[in-house]
Every structure is written in structure tokens, then in C-alpha cells.
Image (cartoon, rainbow, N blue to C red; front, side, top):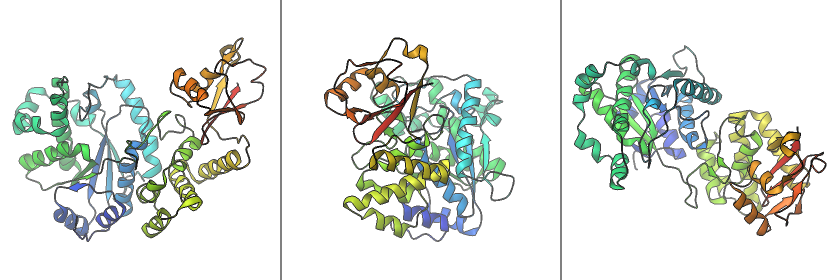
Length: 416
């Protein structure tokens, strides 16, 4: 891409690697240069928290606000009842209204760490599309909105086509999703003058639909912008780990475990991740990313501290770094490791070490835990763990024990 942006926002996101595609570079850049623009990203409330896979676009919203514009986090209280079929092999499980509300509350706590919400011109807004979707009259909606959509065109979108090509069922419920998302953009433009929808590259078809609908109904010029699908240098999808999703809620994943995830970034990804997930100046990100050998570890610690500090606060980042140094450099236990607390009833006459490895999140299954032990990858209080049949009683757990999987993943187990 050779476009040279004039606006601070476009310049920042292009320099830092956020931009995958845009419906009209020149038109959007001109609008951003003329004054504050309102933009949104939509989030369906499918879980109690957001995870690392959402963080790229959360940082995009943060930069949007920092460069003088107004971000909207649109919570999918309405669309979650349908479920986004994009690039999924099956239909999402349907959630109750109470579950959706609980999930929205949990996600809102994460957003408030990154964005400044309020009633001022530059303050972020949190809206819920249930506000306009829940009360729709089906026949009126079909007549006024549905007539603008070509089924032929909808079937050509890659997100739908990939599902049908694999001969996997796509319900009529899910097929409506892209119409509802397009309608969200129309409503946000009508109600709040929103000019821009942003999202991951898998949302391109949905974004284009919304732009087309808004032009047809309101004759307004609006824009779309996508971020790249983020993979690590070894080809894995960003945010996946052996222990499951990397949640952005401290109750679902400890700040130490979050810090450790970033500390374990591969050398090749460190400079790129500094640009995307921190506010460290680009020149410094590039310099740190070029470091080699043991020096790159300082760049990874900076990455872990900066990302953790934004989400959980600087004190949590400092505590995590101190714990990590104690664990790795001094062989100590540390007081901020992920901790599995067991009741006396749970331990009973004894509990197997394999079960403890699984329950502490160091392995995904008993089979995986046994393989870890067989491959000499497990340690108990820093000593090699070789007996997969080991059972620990309450006496053995009278003081916290430390379990390790490899050199970098640790957990404490203790009686409550």
C-alpha cells in the first residue's frame, strides 16, 4: 500500500501495522482530517470476557480516541441472539437474555481499561444493538430493509461460501445475521452520525453490506476499515495457548499468567507485537525487535509489562515481573503464580498429581499430563516428576506445592 495519509489516525495505524484494507482510503482520510469522526466496532456477547484475540481491535479503538475521534463499542445484545456464522463450522449455542446481559457487563469492565467513556464530545460510547433490534416489526423490516439485499450476492461472501462449500448447514437464523449487522451501521449513522465501521478482516463482507445499505436508504457516504487476521510467526492463531483462551478478565486469568503469555512471545514476533499492543514509540519497537540472543528477553519483558500495565495496571505488571524473576532466577515460589486452591474434601484420602496438573491448567487432559511426565517435562517443587501414578495426601499439601510444565509454565497448588 503506497497511500500517504494526512490524518493522525491513519498515519498511526498504518505505521504500526493495524491496517489490512479500507473501502476508500482517500475519502476516509479526508473525513478524519476535517474533524472528529465517530467509528464503531461490534462485539457479540458470547462469553463473560473478551480475550487476547480481541485486543488488536481494542487497541485500534484506543488509538482512534487518542488521535481525537469518538469510538463506539457496540455490544451485540440483539445480534448475539442470532450468532455470527462467519467462518464457523457450526451454529453458535443460543444464550438466554440473562446470560447475554451478564456477558455484556463483564466485557464492559475490560473496555473501561482502554477507553474513556462519558458524555463529552471525545468520550467513548457503549451502545447495545438490542435498543433497535429487539423492537423490530418483522414484516416492516423485510419490506424496508430486506429488499435491498441480494441473496445471490450474500451467498458469494467468503464467510458464507466457505461454510456451504464444505456442505455444512447454514440455518436461516444465521443467514439473517449479516442483514442485522448491516442494519446496525445504518442505525448508528442515523442516530449518532457514525461514519466508520472497523473490524477484523473476516468482517469485510458484513462491513461492505452495511455501507451499501446506508447509501441506499440514507444516501450517506460512510466507510469501512479492517485489521489483519493475526497469526504468530509459526502460523498459529493469535491468543491460543495450551491452557485455552487468554482472557482479559483477572478473575478468569491471573495478571501473572497474562504477563507470562506475553513474556513467552517468540523472538520473531516481539517487535511487531510491541507496535500493535503497546504505545511504545515505533522507532523503539523496531530497535527492540532487532535485538538478538539474551538481549531480546528485555524486549519481551518490556512487551509483557506494557500490555499487562494497560489492562491490569502498572502495579500488577511490576508484581508479575517480580514474581517471574523470583521463580526463574532464584528458583523460588513467588506469590503471584496461578494458584489452584483445594478444599480438604476435594483432596480426601489423596489426589493424583496428573489431576493436579490438569486442574491447574498446565495440561489440557489427563493423557496430555501423563505424556508431559513421560517426556520429562513436569516438575514438582523444581524436582523432576517421573511417577504419573503419584498421589498426594493432605499432609503433602500442608504447604503450597509448585508444579511446572517445561521451563516457563508454573502453578501453585494449596489447601484452602
